[in-house]
Length: 139
Image 1: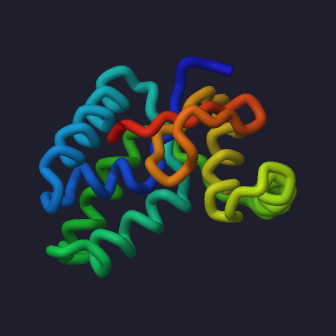
Image 2 (image 1 turned 180 degrees about the horizontal axis):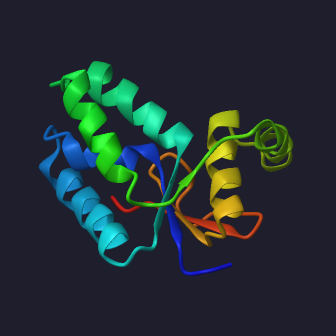
Image 3 (image 1 turned 180 degrees about the vertical axis):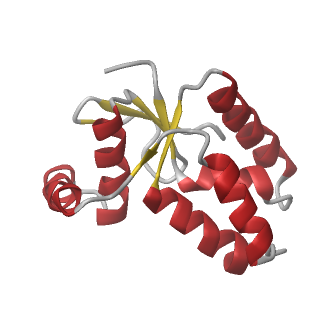
């Protein structure tokens, strides 16, 4: 494994959602460092969820065109594409670790990319899943 780390959807969303200035600042710092150090990794799942959340679920949704521009910008980072094999691995990981399928997809993508760390507020802070640790950047 490497020093690369995986960014969950909530990090990207909080970076562009002004509803909570404290979380926004922390998310922007994590995202900025990911780009500057070339250490951040995303997945197609994260990019897809980002589009849905920022255009429909936040207090002040953005236009689809603006969200699309951000996704194109995020793609300067490596992006893990979900595969059928990864879906099957995620099902097993979900069963074994007793986490949601969607969370297991995040862990599986991180593992595939060689990440040792996932930044997420959805998974348990400090928990380790098959060699991948979770850190909540908003704590």
